[in-house]
Image (cartoon, rainbow, N blue to C red):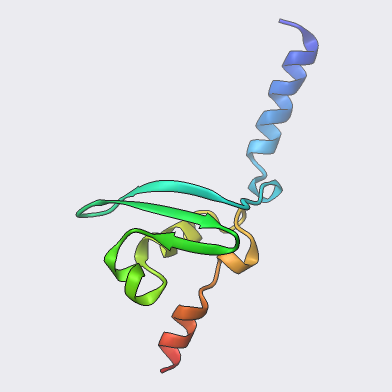
Amino acid sequence: MRSSFIGKIEKASIYAQQPERVTFSSFSVNFHGENNIHKLAYQDGKWHCSCHFFSQWGICSHIMALQQMLPKMLPQEALTSPTLTESIQH
């Protein structure tokens, strides 16, 4: 194997241990919930989930789980939900 390729593999291993180097600007995932598979997306600074709870509240357990799983890779605005904050205060 070429030494330059070995160096890239080593660099990738270092990068993989530093998730703060990555910030998602948009993505979509399938989330396997207890009852269904839900489509989640983060795009243009907004979350979306196909679950019924999200359609009523603008936040859901699926999004909150991703916020906990990916805190170093999400932009700051993706880590909080104005809807949730407002709902708790009322």
